[in-house]
Length: 122
Image 1 (tube, helix red, strand yellow):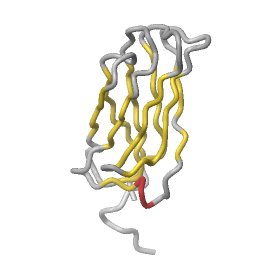
Image 2 (cartoon, rainbow, N blue to C red; image 1 turned 120 degrees about the vertical axis):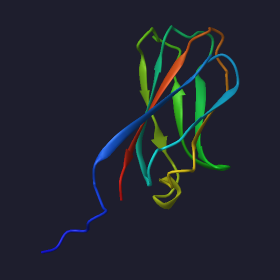
Image 3 (tube, rainbow, N blue to C red; image 1 turned 90 degrees about the vertical axis):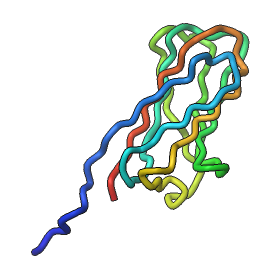
Image 4 (tube, one colour; image 1 turned 180 degrees about the vertical axis):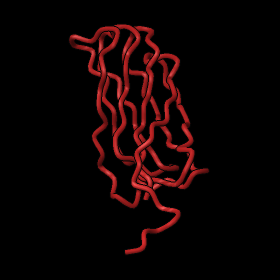
């Protein structure tokens, strides 16, 4: 059986950051190759207080999921996983289309948020 020459099912990670969980801001992360967003994680550099902060994951203006940074019990190194609400098609990103991480900034404490997105080649 012949195998496709230019296809892979390998996963790869792309990373970025939001400078401050307590400030509304956006991070754009290029996937680097055509693929589907499989998972996304956010890790805090410090505990956050007062309220959860919600990061909306988008493809252009289409919302495809959320990452909720929970303040109760948070600490440096707390890691949160995305919940996807968009369709499989919405999670497909061409290499030159950035994944948008739109932070609401609802919490009160300064904390860098490191983002890891796991992509899968199609």
